Length: 172
Image (cartoon, rainbow, N blue to C red; front, top):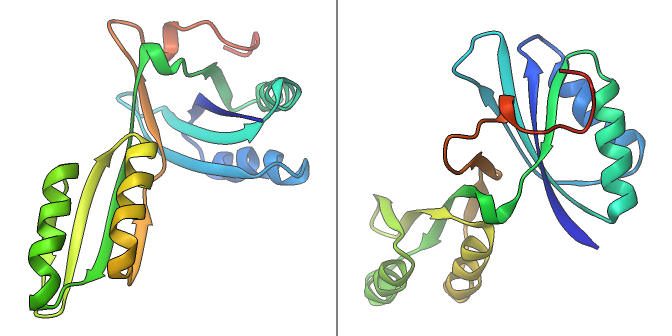
């Protein structure tokens, strides 16, 4: 099984994201990460979906997504030719006796302290998903009170844009 990152350009209309995610649910495919936002053009939204599957799953999902009228373009992100990032916020217990240890760890991973209370600390880390996973593994022994990840976002390197990339269908 492989992880695939699909980026899609959608009409910026109510219910489009629900229909898109519903395609995965109806076929029994789990979405590992989803990130959606407005674009530089108010008529379009952009969604990035990460899921695990084989080549057949990838083919089926792109064909099904392409059938949705409001999906304007679908591309498979090439990790070598793209910048992928995800944001993590994690709240950890940070009593005075372990606070300096947590600060040392956050320095190694280039995380930021975004909130500090007498007994907790909220850390922010941005990077590729494997970096965030590694950070969580190291910080886990201190206890994780709460955490949230944004989901992967991706942009192609250079002058390429989603609009000028090759797509999986003729629905442009």
